[in-house]
Length: 201
Image (cartoon, rainbow, N blue to C red; front, side):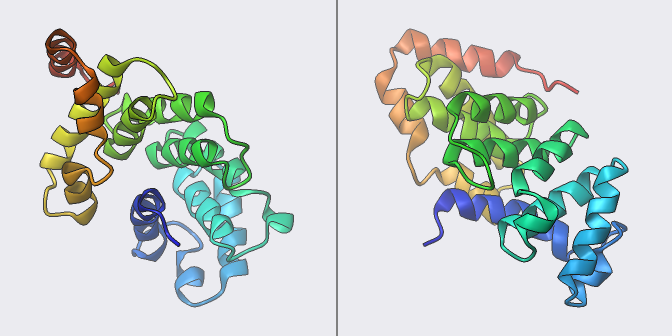
């Protein structure tokens, strides 16, 4: 069964694969030639194309091409992150949070990767980062609520997009969970931190 978090991941990445773009491999993918597409994406990733690395990671994670031939998806998500892709950092964090795509479960690494993208204003990572605090994998409700507020504000700017609407509605209730544990002073502190926050370009 697809989890809501997986749904977020897929919403994030599927457009990279199916949309018309200049990444070598896209035409082969759309034409139903996954091996050819994967080879081209791998070549692009090795030459420094972060989008190609993202796409290859997705293909591997969805079982469209073999781990034996191309390595695990995490390898390519991390490569994409190293090349500056927010999506790559987010997907690396997701892999470590859930122990998927070739990663072992490691909440510290999940937080580190989410933070790279969240610091640059990437809404999905801001939300997932906040959820780590909501679920008490880390104990800093002020920090967690700050990231939830930032994710909500980012989602407000694209409210008609399904993913943004989902973040605004927050079906798992992470914002409420955090807020209910906090004092008024803690809430005010988180709001102040969110107001002072600037993306790290």
